Length: 176
Image 1 (cartoon, rainbow, N blue to C red):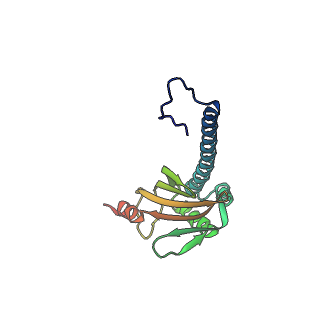
Image 2: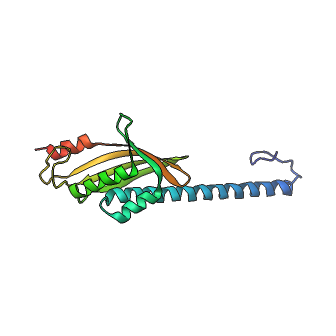
Image 3: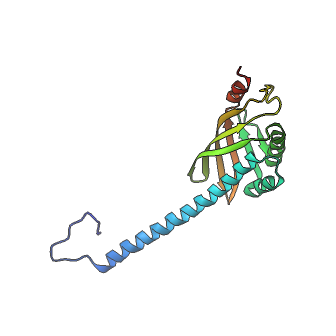
């Protein structure tokens, strides 16, 4: 088999079909990379829509978009208990956050994809207008990190594992 590192005898040229095979192989690789890039781009768009909902939790338009990118049996799994929420429960919880933290913003800091999984390192900021988890920050803001692992199948997010630094938010809001 011809390789880029092999040496040919001085008077011998590579056979044409071998060069064609190499070009065909490179073209196939380019198509694969392009298709993978398109799949990743589609996943990125879905994930961006997910975080747009988190940043606009009181918006019915964003809630509808969230419904369209998640499967009907999507589940949100946070904490160590293994308890989960379905998408309507999360939409309800986030509507409460919209009233409590009107300036809530959830930013994607970094996104990585491997197979069906998309891992997002996020940053949530906001200024609660009342007590958050029992802590009255009296106009103070929080700035916390989150890590989420989303599973995508058949063009929909089917599951999201997540952890947020709410303890850090409580320290920031309660700091004197």
